[in-house]
Length: 450
Image (tube, rainbow, N blue to C red; front, side, top):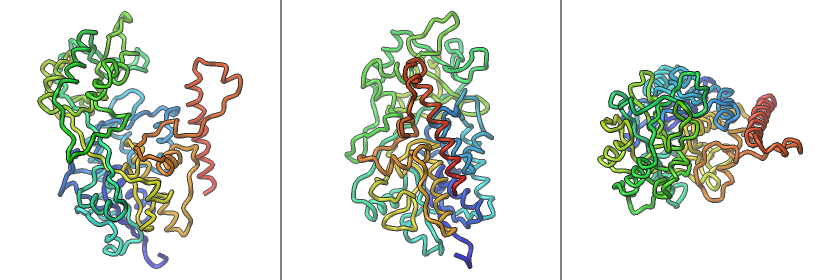
């Protein structure tokens, strides 16, 4: 490697692949970035550009005392392209970082394609093991996401595991803003000063409307699982119709909870459907938490029962898709390299993490480890007190693989003093603040030690 520039092939230009490719290229590594979506889109993809946000346009909370907040702190330290462009294409969403997804994707694509160290190639990959020799590369990164192509999925099953690996996910609908009846809707954020401009549009329901809606969700026709498989959904991203099936009040205590969304006069609706701006123009709204298995005609019929949605037109309807992921504990090393193919790394949701920032952070993590190898250094374990370290620890130790988003339950418990334990009010918030502070300090010490 002393006589030639290091070269890495990255398969997939989603969030993890884009982060890995950009991070490596910024460190003077030659990157071959292979992307297949212009040739063969998967069921969830709509755009032909990189880093497409397929489920929602939110990159979650910016608050430092949240799991996503501490993860963003770590991603910033690693020079995250996703966060940089995310802030540049931000749309109002309270404390969350939501983006205009088309502008976001286009900007990242332009940056990657114009980078002097990145060669972008449109190509479907069926055998990543052959790429090292074909491109005379030092390493290969597979970052194809949870909806990888059939050919590559077959290779993964045949070459790495005989187990069937899948996990269903769902996408929420997007509604045309001009088709809504605003006389029945109101703007208000759940956790924001009422004097500030609200980012979320709310559709309130009374008790009768809510239970009629829940009954319609239960009775509506759903898209069946394919190929004789059972649906297995990520618990933090359940379709709204599954929530309704679990109990009549389940949605009302989840994405439809009215807490913090009182009308003027402090009266509270029985339940609320929240809408978040889909783009900077505000010409479309994403239905927050409304992932669904409902067939397309049924979505239109049932969702038009929501007050203000009587004549709603949908830009995108919801859908379900099959997510594939590896059993990282048995197949990968802690640096996310393959035990069988040491030059091959895996990044993103395919490793067993769930969520945009989580996937992006895995791309940055893999780039970090590859750069160490290029520079003749051993892989480095991250402190488990950090967000990235906790995610890696989770996917490398969980007995039964199940994708996880970042949450404080993955981090070691924070010890409280006797005085802090006595204060029941605010104790949960305090523990999160202390865990986030500890995570940031652990990361700073980690980077100082490199």
